[in-house]
Each structure stands twice: as structure tokens, then as C-alpha cells.
Amino acid sequence: MSKIMVEAGKKAAATRRRNEKQVQRKRKEAADKAAKKGKEAVTFTKVRLNKLGWKYAEFCSRKKNPIQGIVDLIAVKLDKHDKSTVNVILFQVKGGLYNRVSDVEKVKLEKAVKKVRIAFNCAEKQKRHVEFAWEPTDELFDSHCYSCDGS
Image (cartoon, rainbow, N blue to C red; front, side, top):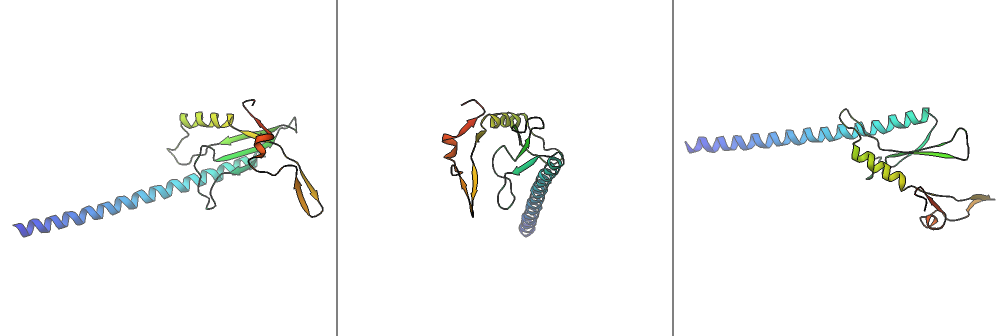
């Protein structure tokens, strides 16, 4: 009897290992599918923005993976009536059938809009090179910055 129980135990262990591998494979497939849908959503958003006349910048790594943060895409367009006014939109992009932007993420986007800092700079081409009035670094925001909260 003990030999039968040992063989049954080995069989059960092998079945568990096989099931674990199937679960891992399904999880990987689901993660890959979600990443693909996310990239598709960003691509479709960029196409739509382009058709509407917006210029955009995507925040992603060199390998085109999304970076951490609430803002995935920024769109910029000059105002139709006042060409010295710039309209800016921050985007959180989601892909997939059940993946929607949550209320918490919408609140985070509203907070991100209030944190936008805008600076100005001048560039002049002198013969063979371009000179900036100020070097475009983070320190530029210390002295020539205008923030949406009025500071």
C-alpha cells in the first residue's frame, strides 16, 4: 500500500507543478496583452491628437515602456484666436476593455495641472551655433518660472 501512496504523492506533486507552470504562463500572457493594449491606446491617442492639429510628447523610457507617474502624454496647441496663448492638455492613457481611468487618477491629474511650471527662454543663431539667453536646465525654473498657482 505504501508504494501506491508514494506514487500517488509523486503524481500529485507533478500535477501541481504542471498547473503552476500553466498559471504562470497565463499570467505572463495576460501581462503581455495588457502592455500591448496600453501601447495601442497611446498610439491611437497620438493619431487622434494629430488629426485634431495638436502637437504631443510622450513620457516613456528609451524602450518605449511607460514611466511611473500620472501623466503619460502632453498635448500642446496654439489658440485659434490668440496666437500668443498656448493650450496644454495632460493625458492619462489607459487601454483594454476593463481598464478605465479611475476617479483617484482624475484627482491626481487635476493636482498635476496645478503643479505645471512654465518658463521662457530665447534662442539666437549666431553663425554656426545657437545661443540661449539662459541654459535650459532645471535652474531656469528658479528665476524665470511662472506657475499655474500664481507663484
